[in-house]
Image 1 (cartoon, rainbow, N blue to C red):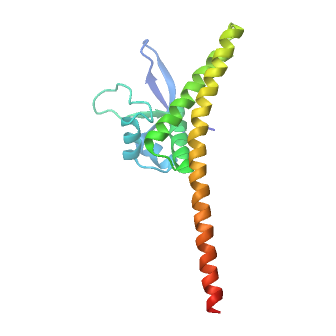
Image 2: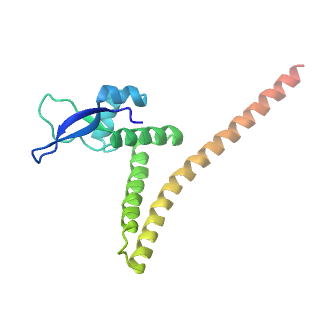
Image 3: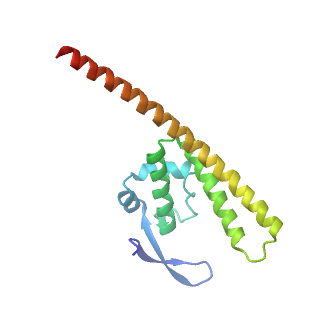
Length: 160
């Protein structure tokens, strides 16, 4: 069930279409961030830029844009990556999505299909490299904390 409200939006062809949208403040509350963060993510390219709109009108966000923001925030939180690393990760995901769309076409020749699969593999490797780097950092931190805990426990035993 969509949490977005229906609004009438001109389609450009003289007709109006029902579009599910939210304003920036509503999106911010829904995903647990601030409008400023959303605007910044748009500025640096993590989210699609604001489409042309009349001066003074509000930016409306589609369900797909809200889901993209959720994914950006989930990955940033989960991986603890810089915004630049996050851009790289998301660019690879977008490239994989484009490859998947091409692979779904029925007229793809076997040689082209192989080429697309190899391209997807390259994107996955880039993503895995970033995730493995973060995992290694977490493993190192875990080892450091375990060692410190052992030293503190040893000192407590010595005091007893």
